[in-house]
Length: 558
Image (cartoon, rainbow, N blue to C red):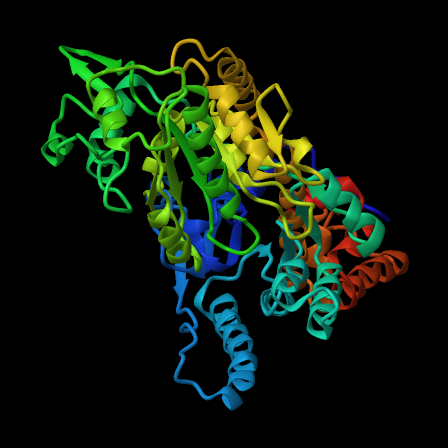
């Protein structure tokens, strides 16, 4: 007969104290320093789910200091496949293309199955899908762990940018991504549009976990701005070309001055923004083909020419005259624009060469790579953000815009299918489809800058409201933690029962865990019942085990 369930709170506390601390592994086949969402996952797993966290990824960029300082987070850095060499004969290039994913696959298996301790749960970023998904799935089988996918985009759509949608390789990649995606024990995704696509056409039920800014993204205080500008002032005054409206007339000796920058002045203990400062516009890019940076360059040229036309300036007017007037403190109806472009990527040098050939009177560009600590401060100090992300699938959202809103920074973004899930037109930002539309928006927003630009102030208030309404910790606690906790919990349950009850001869031990009196021998019905549980554990997934056990019995296994 079935025994009684122990009600004692002391027994419950004893069981909790015996339980080992759970473990999670975050897998990124990419630079962990350039994967902010996965860094935030790791921090939340450690701080909110109280798990030990292993990160398996490539190195390159410095991760957030909070990640490095957390004693529960351990980073394992894999060696990257070397970049392709021009000296490799063309006949060998297909071999190298096949060899790369094979080497990556075995390296991933080595780290996931040997280097790290056995986790309860693997969380993997997709894309890339090949060979990440198969390696993580195999590792989850071998280590008896749960497998959770976080869908950032569709990998096959990124491949289609270079090979075309009709390529057989793209079709094969899509099949592979779908096949292994359906094998995941649970899935997260970044938009409702992607959730619908996964459910309708892929047979995958995913939970939407919107990107939200962590607390490090906030509007910068006057002191934070001044200190940042002091650190970056020398970079601001170094033009990409020979000279421009920012560098001309400002001696480089001023770049080391600690009480005066391009934007701020320190008087006593107070920080003041200069009235004739340039408007600071920030855009973050990966310098890849899915972001057409040419749109921004064309818009900058249009802004420059339209302002000259509005002010009635003759084309023959020497830009040095304008720069001299600005340096003497003259204010105009439209300000100078300083575009700070952050990021790394393959097309950076190509666009830098184009910028050097531009002849602009009131617009300047700087390209930078900022630390994980300085980047939020730059966003919190800027006047406007520009996003050129178009999405290869049309179903993901740019995280850079989320970060900008977290800093109270309004955004002008390229319009595409699901961007309105994030950018609310005339509330926290504007959308554009061409360089001409972006130029119109720049003129409208910066007219009367810095004190009389009412349209920009309205958007800034909306961005502040958006950024303060939700944060990553809150979003993760509500949507990701229940899913991840459930997946890791059942992995633990299965592991415990398999270890303790690997044969029917040890079913008595399972009986004691479940609270059945040891003094009462199991009858034939109970023996068959436990044999059924063991069969499930050996031959089926944790999902079947979940449906087989009642909630009370599962609770007693902990």
